[in-house]
Image (cartoon, rainbow, N blue to C red):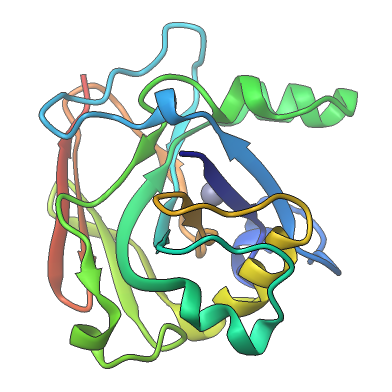
Length: 205
Ligand code: ZN
């Protein structure tokens, strides 16, 4: 499986990092080795001084998608969840300044958090563009979003990606983070909530 991620898909987050709003989806990937086993804590890599959380809605692809039009993209998924796209922000800044790819800052082991269980979209009301979510750090809400604020909808993203690379069953689409990203430190606990439902509880080493 592969993990496809979307950058700058919420206007307020693009602004907080002083990035322009994209005119087409900005996509990058993480390898399957980036997925953290949920029994394990998240270990901050020793080569970054600014490791940041980005809470994101994840869509689990459940059928092969290639050259899918947006109006048919909803057939490609039925389950969603919340996760984190961990980012070594200091490393990413250096790579961006040099015009280099981001993998060094985004694709490291443990950098992709997924929910403990996937939730049927139907159970959440069925509208993927109207889902509330929050990230709590040590019991305090640090990120709060609603998928209605996405610049590119889930269906547009799937259509776009499916014209570049085939999406396969089990692939994960991380749909971008709202404003409020910030650093993690050893001892932190991160908890994700999707429509009020607990998604993960993660300890940082
Ligand atoms: Zn992200």
